[in-house]
Length: 161
Image (cartoon, rainbow, N blue to C red):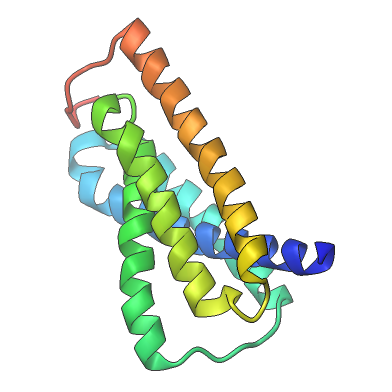
């Protein structure tokens, strides 16, 4: 049971890294004209995170995913990861939105990953336990970030910084 849990967690982390990397790169492209150097750093971070995910995936099994599942749940995963990474990127600018967008995006990514790849790796009970614990961690971290920015103030959403 412990090895099945470890394998699931490792693959979920790989998926998060790959899609988060893509999201950071996408954000850098979209915001580049507004934030210059910040977007350059975001792009490099995205490339590094994506490469970590690709490396972890390469070390895992070579399961085949149907095109239908990939497209259907890939959309859920990409929206979720867009929420997750976009919320993280914009927490200082809009903590009121990010406090719910980040956890929602995390849960969407977890559901999509479990549906695409995790069913064969982990029992329903194990995924519920992992999902509950990890989602609570993400929610508590988001609430902490929201409290920090609420206490110390934040700027309006602006790409000029």
